[in-house]
Image (cartoon, rainbow, N blue to C red; front, side):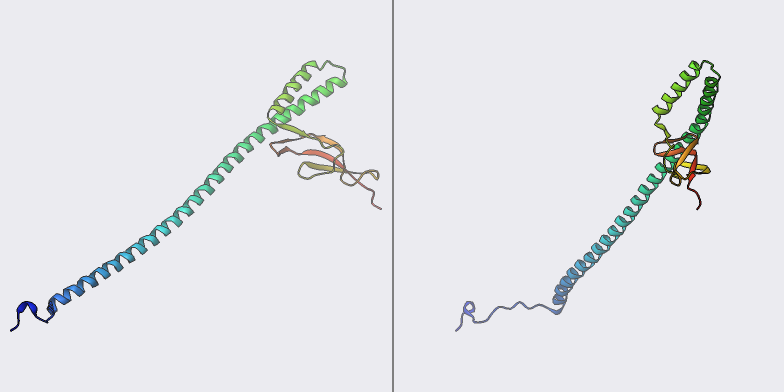
Length: 187
């Protein structure tokens, strides 16, 4: 007689087909969810990268626009300042001519000298400097040649006469110097 407790049989849990399908569905469902979430994460990463690229382009466009706007403002202000300086320099030239005429006619020029001294101080204060041309080699960026004189003793393009003083400000030519330049003899 055998005792039920001492059986050599191994207990087996019998799972019905329905229960087996549920276990498989759960594992498949879990894998499917993981795969789905992974795809969603990849899609969001891609969207993030695209947004970052767009943001970089927009930022670069903004920086370029900012630089261009700043440059346009500076150019506009410089153009107006240059226009004013040109008008001022015409008056300044008239004062110098008047002083020279008075001086030649032995008329007292103290008043004009004082005004010119104040004008010189004003030009210096705003970094407007004359272009020294006499004896220099002609530079089309600084000078404007209005006549050529043949002189065998000088090198070609040597400035021999200043007809009107030129001025430079902030590394910009406000007004080029009108000059007469030399040319060697044609042999």
